[in-house]
Image (cartoon, rainbow, N blue to C red):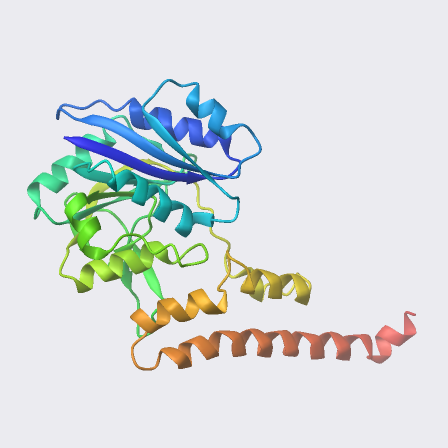
Length: 293
């Protein structure tokens, strides 16, 4: 069996090295050849040179520095599929795998359908709490998903965080690959949902198989302590919910009312910002405020 890990990285040399070392240091009972494709997206901290020095079978693809996660992973996937591996292993470059991680994922894959995707939960390296995992829809809203806690048996999930995902080559080809047209995030949610619609089962493996700290800000564009311009830039930027990417996701997974969800998000941002501006204005204009001037 040939397994090719795909990663993308930007100026996280030490984390990327730790991730790759944990991958190539797997304790495998199943005979397997491990390779990796890393998209080094314009790093200036010597990531590519450091990876080349570990003497492991890693193909490095140079990026321009503006690919972000979705386009970087799509590029890595495309390069990896040219080599026709049996499976692709998605890895976030800040993941550190347990030594038996891959063996456990392969065991789940062997028990399930040959076309299933195996998803893994990861834990915080300090607290041990689950940080990323499989996901199930919480309610009617196409963005509201809740994290599924891993059990002692494989669980079917609707979609997933893309930190550790084992994908058979046939599935990757049939689904059409990671969509690099997303600005940054949402490509993993989109992939899992497209898989589900295509009849592919997303299986969450038992337990956790590695560590990865939570790195997702909680809607910083609604944080009243930040200036309006800064919040607007984050909302519209690659790591927020840029209009084109948000619309791309909702057209696929938001149903007939997708435009309502699209418009509601930006309307809420403007309403909250206006309310905060009015509150500040009233506070500055209050008698107590004037007495203190």
